[in-house]
Amino acid sequence: MDLELIKELRAKTGAGIVDCKKALAEANGNIDKAIEILREKGIAKAVKKAGRATNQGIVSAYIHPGAQLGVLIELDCETDFVARTEEFKKLANEIALQIAATDPDYVDREEVPEEVIEKEKEIYRKQLEEQKKPAHIIDKIIQGKIETFYKEHCLLDLPYIRDEKITIKDLIKEYIAKFGENITVRRFARFKVGE
Image 1 (cartoon, one colour):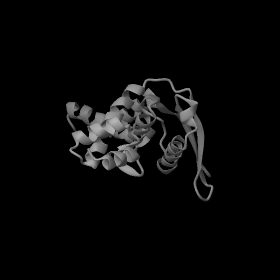
Image 2 (cartoon, rainbow, N blue to C red):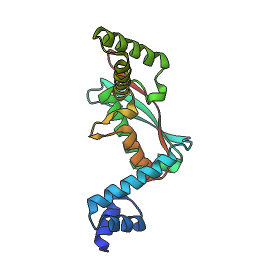
Image 3 (cartoon, rainbow, N blue to C red):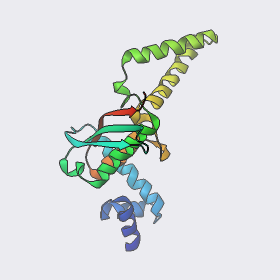
Image 4 (cartoon, rainbow, N blue to C red):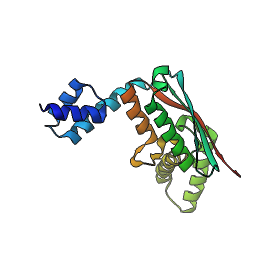
């Protein structure tokens, strides 16, 4: 196995030497495929860590040039050690920038009040009944529209502004895999002059 390839993969992913060696062997020396393999394994590990308590973290602020728009975010993790790293601060700033750009209403789906969802369903149902759609089709369409509602109003479901192929939840999972501990967005506030 080429040592330079292992070093390059390690530099790009932060994964251990043994993991890099295995991933390169599985990918037949293709570094891009090896990165993909490591990401998949890291995300799988990240899912296992997602239930752990996050009692440390930071509050980060982003002020848009011109000082007309600002965001405060509390990003939590498991240890003070991780909270103080530059990479963790960078993640907090990226998420704050995302909030400034996309103006979500909630952190995640669980935070959306049931009455908001019921009201949305009621509106969609009326719209669809006016179009004379059959009842069983209406229910399927409403489910799809609620899914879209989450993707437009919940921070974790939003497409990441720097890479629309992944969501903010996916971005956080990558960092969970990198740090080896759970990370959660506890809360945020977005301020805009005149709003």
